[in-house]
Image 1 (cartoon, each protein chain N blue to C red):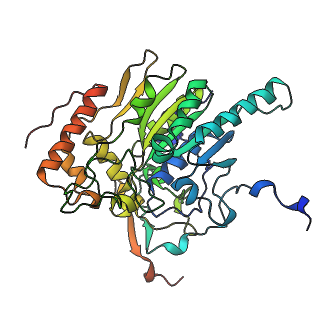
Image 2 (image 1 turned 120 degrees about the horizontal axis):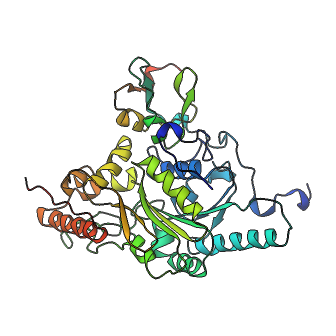
Image 3 (image 1 turned 30 degrees about the horizontal axis):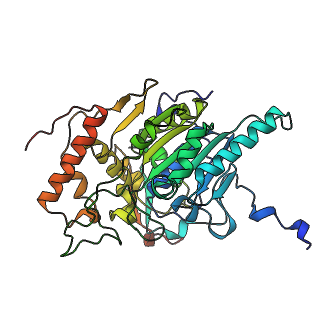
Length: 93
Length: 313
């Protein structure tokens, strides 16, 4: 490898959808679980997530558990109590 | 021209501050970064002076930005922003690029804008560069372990201002008021506003108005820090809301004739004690200290024209 192949001044490519270099899902101690019957689709949890881990899909909101740190803001801000925090150790995966 | 966002449902779905960063769970500054990036859109360059949003985001040679980002030292966020803006203008003038002029946004912490970085910020605004300077205020030097900064409120515990027998209230000084330092005395300033993460649509609209202003614009964003302020990570947004409802933080814009226009008036003012008791950094305060903070909030509100008196309970 010659010096010409080294990126200039520590430049790295920008990620497009997710930053694979820092997967944070394993920090989580509590997992958010959505009750779809109670959800009114108001999107307050979506806009309040610091990690952009709530995706708007065609079937409703979905959590991105690969990166969710389990901070619990979504459950706290939900006006209809549709999100509960379940201890992570209740899950096998 | 970026259009105003009317409702939450109309907010852009695209993320330019993507998942995968080393900020703490429930980080207020990370949430405001995401909202700012969302509002600014794809044609944006971020300048990140040293602070939490540089240190915690750029670990191990990667970062969570889907748009260009460059690091600046904590002293010179405004200077690096000025240089990028001037270079782009020159390239466009000399027809050396057919790129559209980007949104240049400096994302500085309270240390990088009110303390160590204030000279570069003031210089950039004095010269009239077309950039948006954002100060996300988590009221301490948080990434080095919660040292006091000029915007740390009176009475807060930090590692530099521990509460003890000598100073029972912790921090003895009252904080700097950065938006008011910036608002008058920079004749080129085009737009100034304060925002809070508890009012996301309002925050995104203020970002867009700042970028539309075609000149130096300043945005001051209140961003609670679970680690530094000692509260559970899920309370970040509720505490930001409570700061506005108790008058500890005021939401306003500066109009063209340099007056402050309040953008959100709490319907009923809550006592500051409700805000203080949720945070571990204020748990040592005695009633006389809380009274001082109540007067401080009252004075700040009067300065921008919020005339609500606290109901005595």
